[in-house]
Amino acid sequence: MPETYDLHCHSTASDGSLTPDALLRRANEKGVTSLALTDHDTTAGLAGAKQTADAIGIDLIPGIEISTTWNNKCFHIIGLNIDASYLPLVEGLRELRSTRTRRAEKIAAKLEKAGIGNALPTVLQQAGQGMITRTHFASFLLRENHVSTMQEAFDRYLGKGKPAFAATTWVDLAQAVDWINESGGVAVIAHPLRYKLTASWLKRFFKAFREAGGQGIEVVCGRSNADEIHLTGNYARQYELYGSVGSDFHTPENPWIELGRLAPLPKGVRPVWQLFS
Ligand code: AMP
Ligand code: MN
Ligand code: MN
Ligand code: MN
Image (cartoon, rainbow, N blue to C red; front, top):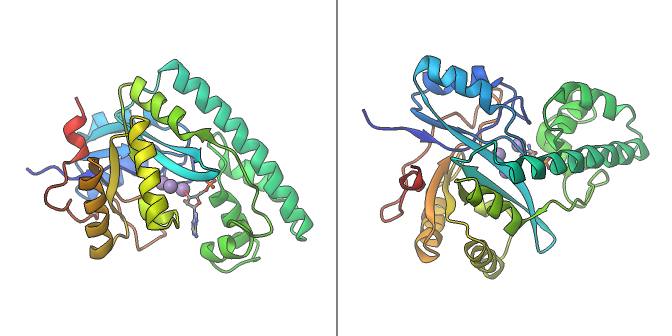
């Protein structure tokens, strides 16, 4: 049977709506044979995911999506096939957790100024043990009828330049790539076309990522069209990066993105899973 990979998705350990257990079961139902769970800045979902994966016979790739800073901008770097017990990674993620908590306090204070109170306790409660993300704030704004879609929450309040945006310094790009490599994993640029970079800045970014020791790039994302896949495939070949495929699934409530629903890698792009040992 051919393998079906999905190497990017989220659980309740960060901003996904399914528990690791439910996520693995859904992936299996959708025909995924190898799933990487890649929660934002946490590996807390991996143990539960592994239990289910072993029970139902699906391959779990231990992963993460790390929030990094390069040139004062935020970039998401996926770590695949990592060792989640690698101490510098564990300690680094503890730091990112407090960065996220401090940022949540700032976002809540800004919302308060915009006339929307009580966000923090609600969001903390929703996140539970998981990482607090802007998705939690967006859900809060939606539930309280301040906006009518998640997108509107980002467009009106949470996006860059909007009233409740809190500028944040994440971990340095090269540091995150080191953690991933030293833990035995492969570093992959997540959704490369979502950073709104000009072509020349994108190229500078790819070079910096390569020089830092990064090896992969997401060529196929959940909503990529043929042109985007073609363009990103060319970048992969040009910068000698291995290609990854990942839906970035968060919730069954979003009908546009499903686990495992991904186009194949373009010809000549080496699959990132060749690097998994
Ligand atoms: P954070 O890492 O806390 O800044 O949150 C970023 C998360 O917010 C992303 O991983 C997405 O899941 C979500 N997100 C970002 N922009 C949007 C958007 N326009 N609509 C819906 N969700 C978004
Ligand atoms: Mn997310
Ligand atoms: Mn991301
Ligand atoms: Mn993601």
